[in-house]
Image (tube, rainbow, N blue to C red):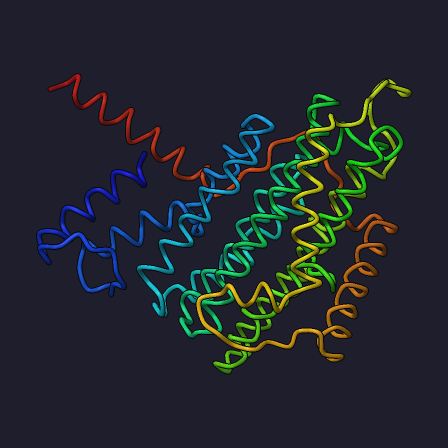
Length: 361
């Protein structure tokens, strides 16, 4: 609601300034365009404005979460690309976005909240590319947004199926599902491979466009930040969800519980998304032909494939060592506080004070 009201205010002021409501590229030279940026920023989950995702997506229904992840934040990315392409501020906003959720995603017990935090990081890649604004960067935004919808929806379907059959999506309540839900577990692994950008998956083809666009602008420090985030997502999503949610020891209070495989329609939906994401990775040329700007990309070079596999192997090794020696955070039945705690507490205090003042008047 706040985002919509701010956007409506921006439209009114923009019409007063220009006499037009045409939606085109803007510059941050007036209050109206700043209001546009704030409204889109809330929807895109800018840092410190992101908590609505973690408070809503994991609490929605199994189907509702999938729909939310496909449309809400991606619509904001589209709006930013239409209205603020090449705005340098977005580069640094995106840089914070890719790193900020890493700790929370690692500590989170609820797998659906883990995915929601990972979404924040993946959105950051796209926001950076919008800020760069080159043809390769915009192609990267369009491509990665599409793939992000596929693998995010797939992971939400997988964890949603676990929630549907067990009544929980929390690590402390799951484990051992590969025995009773083998097909769902298989798709959990596929979703993990896609999000970590394993070769022959769509994300391997699309994330490289954004990384290349950053290197073309010689932003080496930013590239390293993005590389760190790419490695982090391997551990806190790509490995965490299938291992702790499906392949670890059953953590239910009563062992031997009778859990059935996900319904056929759920499995078919997972298969469609997994198939599309893998098909794009296998046939990237056909997919790239649909992007906004015509260009030839050769992603399956020896250096690119070897580098990505090395990064994945390194991340897996670090994860294994951390788990083996008890260094990886243990999921607990607790609530992890985020930045919204501050404005929730402050907002409550302001409202109470205002109420007291009104009573006095």
